[in-house]
Amino acid sequence: MTETTIASDLSTTYDAARAYELDRAHVFHSWSAQAEITPMVVTRAEGSHVWDADDKRYLDFSSQLVFTNLGHQHPRVVAAIQEQAAHLCTIAPAVANGARSEAARLIASHTPGDLDHVFFTNGGADANEHAVRMARLHTGRHKVLTTYRSYHGGTHLAVNMTGDPRRWASDHGSTGTVHFFGPFLYRSAFHATTEAEECQRALEHLEQVVALEGPATVAAIVLEAIPGTAGIMVPPPGYLAGVREICDRHGIVLIADEVMSGFGRAGRWFAVEHGDVTPDLITFAKGVNSGYVPLGGVAISEEIHRTFAHRVYPGGLTYSGHPLSCAAAVATIRTMEDEDVVGRAARLGEDVLGPGLRALAEKHDRIGEVRGTGAFWAIELVSDRATREPLAPYGGSSPEMAAIVKCCQERGMLPFVNYNRIHVVPPLTTTHDEAREGLAILDAALDATA
Image (cartoon, rainbow, N blue to C red; front, side, top):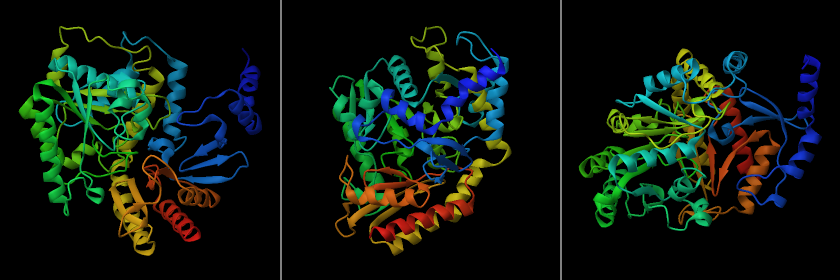
């Protein structure tokens, strides 16, 4: 095949009108009513920005689905993928190769405690599926406890573990999952008035759920270290440590879902570091390689690793530890180390996003609460601050939310929206000036739709 032929094959993919036509003719979109969507055509991206079919530039305040932690088209990651493709595009998971081995080493160098072994998956959902499988085989138990207001993925077990409305259509009560209330002071299930009360009562509630379900039947408690699309509710001090203690007392595996919160998003390599705990398993994806090539995985403690030292682990994937994905992870993690990206994310939250969002809350009555850390923030939009009535119903949208989103897009910013919340989740490499620009656009959108 000649270079001319290759260029011809690729050139058709950059025709925006043709891309939209073929999308509407052939692509089935996730989480959508197919006839009711008009997807944006993105023709290129760089850094914190993307461009549409009309060559209009947008500040990406969503990191797409909160995964472009290094921004778009980072040259070091792109070069690593190109170099790996020229050297070894793919290989079966049963053999060793340099990209996979080095990616595993780098990941293990940043996980807490003794989580020094890595099982690679294609993404976050199957990482959670395999983590639960490991916990069940390790303990000989079946039940899995997860919180309401959580999201763990779209595969069968993962979506049943999920605690928000995305679960409802697929939940037939057959997966051994049990839900409980996690801490969320703004909409407390425990009538708490302080973070300390919320923490204590949430732990007492979890202890009761474990007791009523039967501790000897519970294989794992799975927590998003900081819930992501469910609302970015940072756990109160002491909560993760309290869950760790409950798990230790009852022989339950603690699984931290860090698919969204990991690799710097929360201003630490992993969000569990904010709670100073070490889980038994960590699931990850997204930021591990900025989503440039699909990759996820499970970081495994020494104790659980020993369970499978002389016992076959009954699971695997054709593309586990794919060389292109792992090469992207190696370049991403090394870039994060060399450029102090985790520290930059922490400072972005401390210096710009946190203060800026709190200033917006003082100005706009529709902002009921601001919460977050690092480059991981949410504003809760309400129709009435006193009653805390959400601006969109749980599990739905509203004309008011749609109007705010439209105004943001018209002004050149892509927000991340879920129900009545706007999540402020730009790339970790976003400059302070870019972050201020995004906040100014959000301010103008709230003004225009008041």
